[in-house]
Amino acid sequence: MFRRAVTALCYTAARALLALRPHVHRHLPSVRTAPLLGFNLDSRWSVTMTWPFSSFQPHDYSLPNPSWSPEMMRLYDHYNSLCEQEGGGKSKAPWVRMPSYNRLLKYAKGGQCLSKMVQAKARLFTRNMKEEGASFEYVVFLNKQEKMCTCIFQAGHLLEGPPGYVHGGAIATIIDTVAGALTTYLGGLVMTANLTINYRSPIPLGSVVLVHSLLEKMEERKILIFCQVTSSDGSKLHTEATGLFLSISLGHLIGG
Ligand SMILES: CCCCCCCCCC(=O)SCCNC(=O)CCNC(=O)[C@H](O)C(C)(C)COP(=O)(O)OP(=O)(O)OC[C@H]1O[C@@H](n2cnc3c(N)ncnc32)[C@H](O)[C@@H]1OP(=O)(O)O
Image (cartoon, rainbow, N blue to C red; front, side, top):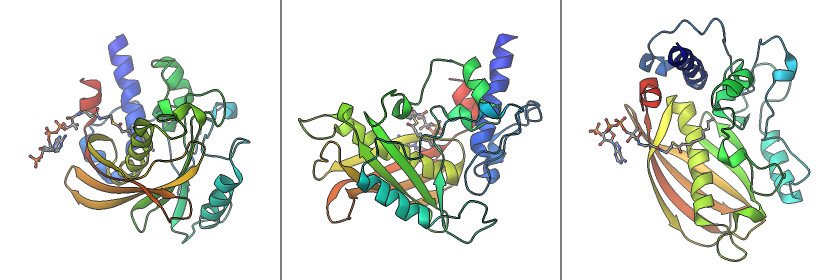
């Protein structure tokens, strides 16, 4: 009984992710939970919830907070100005800001509630710090036409690797996150199969960098991504990476 309930909840959450690209629904068997906990991601990637309690709206971590440096704010304002504006209806603007929650479950309608029922203490580890600015501060913008994402990333003091510089694992994490966001948009439910990273120059702790991720090739379930991390003015290359993502069936996640 419990297992069936958890499975139904997982189906609902996964359907929320798959809603990003409806064509991948072919990977999912039909389920009956959707009418109970439906969801909708509108064209600006903000979640439209019909859950009756508005306070259940999840916190969006990709919005500015006081820890953001002037450079982070400048870049945020720049990319935001390229996006469809609030109340602007259907826009031709190619960029959208992707919302960011501390659990992927929260993309589901009623996901705030779901996330309290399924492994309530679990958190997306890029979004699990209480202190703003201490670790990953980032916002991802998606360009649907170009099939690319650009992330503005401010690396906080807890991400130190070599003294004064960002840890290579933290850089891999933000690359995986940005490439993962792009491939989720392109392929629905995905997992990283392979990441190959070349660290070209160290990233100073506390600095703001740009993480660009773009589609190289998409072949059935395989999505190949190219990434570059550069200084905020683009003059310095910090990191290059390629990633292979595979779109998966829901059974892959809940079957173990
Ligand atoms: C808005 C949303 C934001 C989201 C941000 C968060 C993103 C976070 C993303 C992650 O970090 S995911 C967690 C880390 N990844 C994993 O834990 C994945 C662990 N590995 C697996 O679960 C499976 O190995 C995997 C799903 C990747 C593949 O298993 P499958 O059984 O689906 O694939 P299969 O073995 O049938 O292979 C399918 C094809 O892919 C190829 N392939 C599989 N794994 C490969 C690999 N590692 N390298 C190269 N090719 C690979 C394989 O050769 C084959 O090619 P062909 O079709 O041409 O024969």
